[in-house]
Image (cartoon, rainbow, N blue to C red; front, top):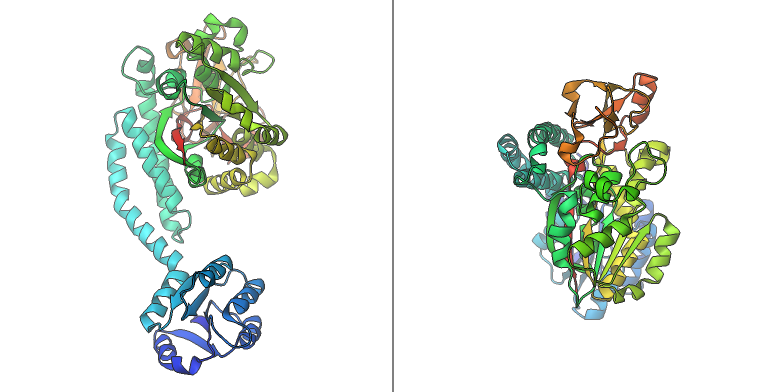
Amino acid sequence: MRKISILWVDDEINFLKSHIIYLEQKNYKVTPCQSGKEALELFSASQFDIVFIDENMPGLSGLETLSELKEIRPNIPVVMITKSEEEYIMDEAIGNKISDYLIKPVNPNQILLSLKKNLDNNRLISEKVSSNYLQEFRKISIEMGENNDFNSWAELYKKITYWEIELENSQDNTLKDILETQKFDANEQFNKFIQKNYLSWFEDKQAPILSHNLFRLKIAPEIKNNESTLLLVIDNLRYDQWKVIQSTVEDFYKIKEDSIYYSILPTSTQYSRNSIFAGLTPLEIQKNFPNYWKNDFDEGGKNLYEDELLKNQLSDLGLSDLKYEYIKITNLKDGKKLSDNFKSKIKNNLTVLVYNFVDMLSHSKTEMEVIKELAFDDRGYRSLTRSWFKNSPLLEIIKEAQNLKMKLIITTDHGTTNVKNPSKVIGDKNTSLNLRYKTGKSLSYISNDVFDVKNPNQIGLPSISINSSFIFAKNNLFLVYPNNYNYYSKFYKNSYQHGGISLEEVLIPFVVLNPKP
């Protein structure tokens, strides 16, 4: 096993022989030197894992040496040791990205603790996380088998998401594989739950918050005439994606509520987002506002009347006097323009912002090789989301909203899932093209692979024609026609799709936040 290599810089290094001997007995390799100049020469010529450096040295000071060390290898941790507790020295050291700060006299145990903290930190955390997950594994498995209501499934998915993110940096690939298997099994059970209960949720029986009642039950109660609220609908935002941007949002906002609601089927923008803004099922939208609804085969945009649908819903809820504005952002230019002019939105009681980036990201993964590589799996997909968000106009908009003391609500219309396995479907020329659901007449399919609904009206969906039905792909399957089956199976494998039934598509975030002072 390779020894950890330490460079220790102190003009009185001879007085630290006992410390060095102690570390060497602990199997560390220590290279002592007495000046900043010597340290820079050694640091340039050899590989060190960490540097201990005295702040007060003749010639190059500790701070000056620190600055030059960081220019050579910025990622090597440097620990400053000083007699002084003056604030400006600490500020300078922190500004130069120091890893730790020790006050003389230091004892060997302090040095050892600093080494553990800076070099073994990731390993120790990884081991602890792995140990904790193993303890939770059995609990999650038991809960999976016992879950018989929609609240339990939401809580279970939160747990699985938590461990997914916690294990991201674990070096134990076996545990990651175990969690992946557990998540697959959870999805299998969740599909059975949906298949058993979904129809009853449209029969005035006890049901979760669904897309068409989200605004009435969750959003409207948060809107007040004497305050301004930003409702942010990020298209296609999964719960795990929300969790990886959460810490950035929390720099500006305090979380009041972090919950999950259920997207309606199909988990597709055309159906779920129209339902959010209308406060109606797709079937009710078609009946009440036929000019605002387009079926799968109709030409033109399927979400062109969200503003009109929202206006009608606000009127039905007795909120017609509410001053609101609906905005949709589909490109970077419009996002920047809005962030530059967002101050004007303070005059609104409600500003509704539909932001489309995440949806475009999921579709780009299918079409662009570079995105396929960056978002090869869920970990990469989350990482790409985090990186985009931190550098996006959307974050600037959130900052502006916080400056304006606006309440913030973050939600979405549906999630997406990484599809792995094809399932054959046969239909006529009027069968819809979505890979996670199909609607049409005379559909032939593998019954175990889908949730089939013979009468779409039972679940609030329009019937495209007499005898047309809907089928929804389960878990990580995607639906492919026999024509060019092998080509499309390969092309869409490991892509992100939505419209079907999975924890990732159906269980989606609803978050209410208050601005920090």
